[in-house]
Image 1 (cartoon, rainbow over the protein chains, first blue to last red):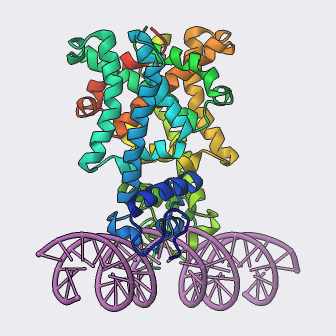
Image 2 (cartoon, protein in one colour):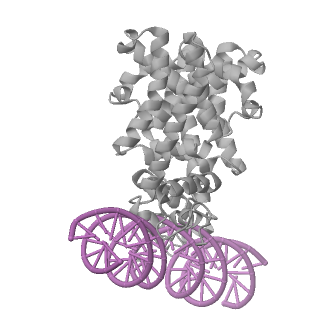
Image 3 (tube, rainbow over the protein chains, first blue to last red):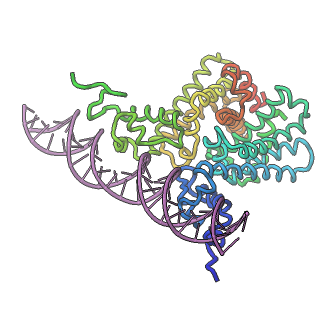
Length: 206
Length: 206
DNA sequence: GAAAAATCTTGACACTGACAAAATTGGCGC
DNA sequence: GCGCCAATTTTGTCAGTGTCAAGATTTTTC
């Protein structure tokens, strides 16, 4: 025997997967306490290591949160593609589905979503982070491209369409999280779908 | 003489207007260091008082920031009405102007704007705060009402219009602040106005 | 199998927000 | 004028935070 059971992993001196464990612990910490109230020491405790252990995997607390946000973008991309997959291949349905996925992710991961677009994620982010964020953005861009044509996207009006779509879904997501849309968000997400579809279509005047 | 000059006020033992001075200092602190990095002790120092002085005017740091956010909403309301005043009395121009004001305020006070809609301002806010926030919202609601008719606003479709308008301006504001709209925000605000008008009109399919 | 690198722990430091107790001041009745 | 009370501010303290340095332990490499 060798005392190899613990919270998150086999618990020897060298954890082995501490980086992953820290990200998982950080997500729990984030969704429980919010970005304010988030504590590095507390997440370390959650992962079953000492308070200084994270330093070898993340330079500082911002680096940890940025790593978490990066994972968030990857999952956001996945959620949008998920919705797309269930929408068939009609371009308009595909476009709407992208927006629905965006908003569903935000509703299911409110604290994480706010972190992904919060002040920490704005200036001077590492390249990998920017790539993950761009990938999410691209899902929307591609959906609009399939609807309007790839050529159109190179024009000013094309970018306006993309921007409008993004603004609309982002605004929906943010206000919903903030509880400003009580008459909507009191209902189940499935009952919001037609409203979301309406909103998303407005952005492109569909 | 009586040693009555200092940073913010006349600097006797009883400050006299400490509450105001703290809010002013807090806004500087916020725009310089952001919501992360905001320090109560540092703002107290800015206002020229000891670290525990704010306690008698604000229960804790959240109460101070909420007071600041409340002022923010009052100024947001003012900015929207300002734009309305310069827009004549055409209902559509009035509606567009409301959105422009919303976005201009956000662009001019990014950190404050994020505070006003951040996690701190979401659950269990004091009544006065909610009133100030509602007042800002009402400017938009009234603009839509003047455009669509007050009766229409009581219907589901009416609320959808209001929500769509809010989502669009909020999304624009947030993405602009986050630097996601570089091709737009690199330009002066006045050159953004036609784009903003376009976006805001999309929300109501005008 | 020993040396080197990576990983984790312990200990320390300055800083933070919050609380308690003492000090200072302004306002009130007299 | 005087004295007392309440409001305000200061000083002192405490637990908790993020980060750094040094030591302990393990894995890897040669």
